[in-house]
Length: 135
Figure 1 (cartoon, rainbow, N blue to C red):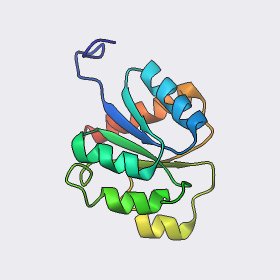
Figure 2 (figure 1 turned 180 degrees about the vertical axis):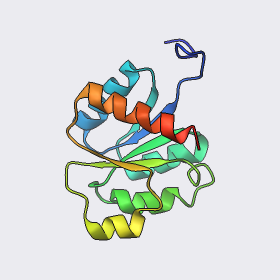
Figure 3 (figure 1 turned 90 degrees about the vertical axis):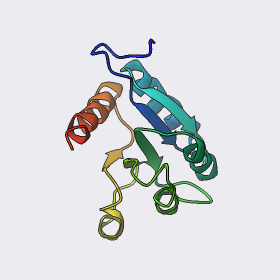
Figure 4 (figure 1 turned 60 degrees about the vertical axis):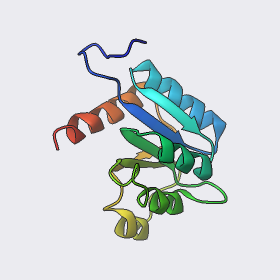
């Protein structure tokens, strides 16, 4: 892949934080295939450390991780200078609970349900950037 997409823009950089390798690999494969530059980390600590040294256009964050779950990771990300303004989309195979929406709704840019189809996933993330870039 070159340094620009077909419209001459730099490809969006996405940080994937997910403790399950099968999902990390699937997400990176799907999003790389549609022109995004992905970096994947297998736990919250590595993801947070990556955000301390690099900037990303989006973080895709799994909710169900150990020992630090996605919600606690989100709280920490939003305290970082590199993470404060970075949109975060939460992902999970579990259904989102009402109390999670109430507590974290203003901190997240969206929610994606696992598993997913590659084409749909690319469309969802591309659609997010189309909307977000207008803000």
